Image (cartoon, rainbow, N blue to C red; front, side, top):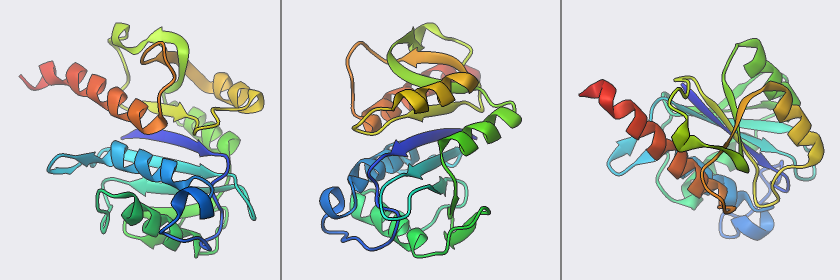
Length: 202
C-alpha cells in the first residue's frame, strides 16, 4: 500500500457542516475531498493500493484522523460532495485511540501528525516530504512500493510539523519549482509512480 497524509489545519472535527458549503462551513474540507479523489480515482476505476489519511485539526475538537482505504472502499463517487458525505459520517462516530469504521473503507480515530508519523517509523515505512526545494522526484528511481507522502493543505505546514516530518522522512522531494494545490501534487506523484512501475509490467 501507498499512503498519502494530508494535514487539514482548519478542517472541522465534527459532522456539523453543510455538504453544500464545504469550503466555508467545514474549514476548507473541500481541499481534503479533492485530495481523496485525486489519490483514489482512475478514469474507469479506483486505485485499491492507496490509503489516504486526513489529519483534522480544526475546531471544535481537534486531533482526529480519518482514513480512506482503497482496498475496502465503497460508496465513493468522484465528486467533492460524495467524499464530504463519507467524512461527515465518520465524524458522527465517537473517535477513540482505536479506529472505528463508519462506512466500508472509512475509519476514524483520535490522533495527529506526530502519532501517525511514529507509526510509520515503527513500521519501517519510507516517508517522503513534499517541498518545492526538495530533490526532483523524476531523478529518484528507487521510490519504495510502500511509500508514504506527507503534504500540507492550503496553509502548508508549520515549523513544528516540519520538524516532526523531518525526523522520519527518508527524503524531501519536489515535483516542480512552484507551489501547487495538494490534490494536483497527488496526481503528479501517482503519474510518476505509474511511469516508474510500467516497465515492470512489460
